[in-house]
Structure formats: structure tokens, C-alpha cells
Length: 248
Length: 225
Image (cartoon, rainbow over all chains, first blue to last red; front, side, top):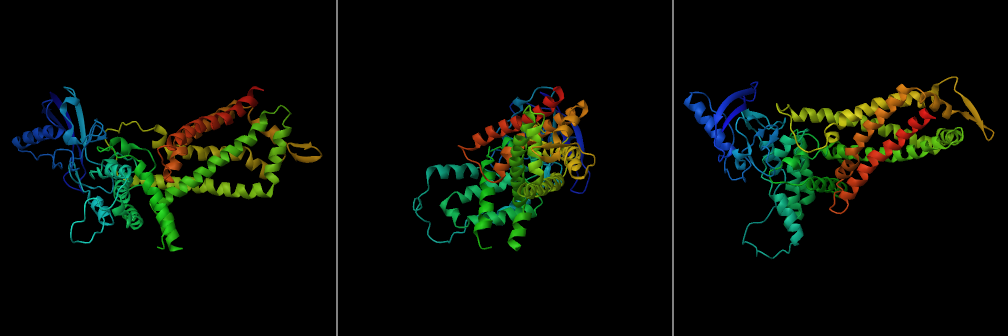
């Protein structure tokens, strides 16, 4: 299949970027990233700079392969990362526009690669459970209600790719932060630090310059792990509750 | 009060203010509509005039009205500030505008809100400003009490097609704003529940159509009668 690609090219964070047009001959069995590899091979052979894009596991769990494809983070398929998106979902002769995540808190480093370290700092501010080292505790020593554990695991499927921020018209990181707050806070092990965690993660999220949630719901539509905005409501009530019920 | 200022200036705190003021304004709409429906009683405006006279002279109502003006301003100013801040946080636009099945209203709340704010200037100019500061107002005497003939004023304005159309447009904008705003206010408060959220959404959709439609009946009724 013959495709026309319009890819965002930007030398570095300070440079002004623009869309560059290329023709690519792809196979319908290729993944989107393999098609991008074909483009880069072509560019290298033509002694041109290949397109910088992030990728790692190529099996849908690392959250690196971030591209906005025809206006949609991770492309047109529901619940699918770019690496798991196959070219059979496109037609011969299609024009595909590929852009980086757009959000002030995710500055472009080069071409399609953005700096997502803001997410790391949100996690560092409280996205963990403090456990003493020593003998591994017995697997079933803490009873966990099955429904709660399922909800926590649904939230834990977040791969931190940032599609929620990319899709949000406000560049808000509420879906990501709330998934992490829910994933830890729903389980007894995470309950101990839940209130403190919610407050510090929200504070860090605000500090990073993400926008504010206006309940549009684009994040849950585009999330490759289909994380629900129920988590955002949970974080809202945890945050309001924790501010009103703690001494600090 | 350090914790309070920190709380209220956090992203969730600001959204909480939007939600609570929005819910207050939703309650106000119900009261406003209930009172205005007295325009429909075919008694030459007696019921409506008694109602407006009560509203403009009762000290409790007048106190709540001050709160209402404050909440409208807070909702509008904060809403615009948040929209500007959110636009900055987005940073840039995509070359291809995103197509997903989110509602048009949810993506355009600031625009809809600004239009409603402009509508309020027209509305307050027609009635509130006239009743407070206008001169040569039509007067009427009901049960021995002299009062402003508000009904005559409303009828006069609603006899002009341009104003009828302007009010209908204003109400349509309000309907779109409520279409997203009603359920959104509950989500911001953290009230999301498998059992109740579908009910909140359904009530929100019915409310966003029924209340503006209820208001829209009034200019149409006055114009065609």
C-alpha cells in the first residue's frame, strides 16, 4: 500500500517545527512503527535525518510509542497503542498526519519525541507505597476484597504514555494522576499513605503546569488502556476529603 | 487559613468553586422559572406583578439576590480565567483537529458561558436596570398596593420580534451549557457512582432541555397573545 505521510519535524525544543511530506510503500501486516521504520530506512538511504520517535517494548505495555495519528493519540483504534496499530486499518493512498503530543508540560525534544518527565515527578511525589525491607510477607496475609482489587488493577493498567494529556483540550493530567492515586489508594497496602499521597500528587501535577479537568472525557476515549474517568471523580473526592479531614 | 487558600487555588479547588457556583445557579434557574411561569396566568399580569413586587421588596430575597449576583460573577470570571489557563496548558494545536465522540458542548463551555454572560447584560438591561434605575415606569395598583407594572414592561419587550429571537437564542445557548454543565458539576465534586451517575446524566439532559424550553415558552406566549 502506498501512503502519503505528513510527519512533524522539529530540530529541538526551541526550533519551530513543521509538517514534512513523504511517500511510503508499506505492507498491511506491518505495525505503525514498522511503517515508520520503513520511512526512516528510506531517509537514511537518502542521506537524510531519520524521524525521531520513541519506542521500546513494541507490545503495548511500555507507553513510549506516542504519536498523534490523524488527530488521535495512538491512532484510530480503540484501546490500542501505536505499536499495536496495524496498517490494515488504513487504506492504500491514504494521507496520514503524524504529530507529537501537544501539551505545555510535555515540551517537544525532537520531532515526535516529547519530554514526559513531568509524569515521573508526579510519581516521585507520592506514587508509591512505603514498605519496610525484610522477609517477603505471606502472599495472602492482608485480605483484599475481590471487587476492589479488580478496580485497583484496572487503574494499574495505566502505562503512563500521556495519551490522556495529548487528547485533553486543556492538557490536563487528571486521568493519569487519578489512575495512580486509585491504583494505590484502593488497596489496603496503599491506604496508609492515601490522603498524603493524593495531596502531594495533585500539588505536583499543578506545579508541572498541566491544565484543569473540565470533564470533556476525551482522555478516557483515547486511553490505550481504557482507564475510566471514574478515577478522576475518585481523586476529586479523595482530594477534597483529605484536605478537609487532615491536620495539614 | 493557609490551608484554605492552598486548597481553593489548587486545580481541584478551583474546579470545586466552578461546580458549587454552577449548582447554585442551577437552583436559581428553577426558582426563576417557577416565578416567571406566573406570566402565563391569564389575569392581565396580576400574579406576575405581585410576584415581582414580592421579589424586589422582600429582604431575604434581596439578600439571596446579592449572593446570586456574586456567584454569577465568580462563576463567569473564574470560568474565563480557567479557560485561559487551560488554553496555555495545551500549548499548541494539532494540524488535524481531534475527532472523538465527546460532546460539542463540553469542548465549548467557555464560549457558551461568555455568550450567556453577554445575554445576561441584555436581560438585566431590559428588566433589573429599568426597575432599579429607570424612570417613567408603568405603575399599577393591586389590592390597594401601588407597584411597578412589570407585566406591562415584559409584554412591551416581548412584542418586538428582535427581542423574542434574542431571548430564544440566549436560551438555546443556556441549554447547551447545561447539557454538559449539569452532570459535570457532580463529577467535579467526586460524585460518580455506578448506580447514580446514569441517573444524574439523565436528569441533566432532561433539565438542560426542559428548563430553557420552559423559559422559551414565555416570550413566545407573550408575543403571540
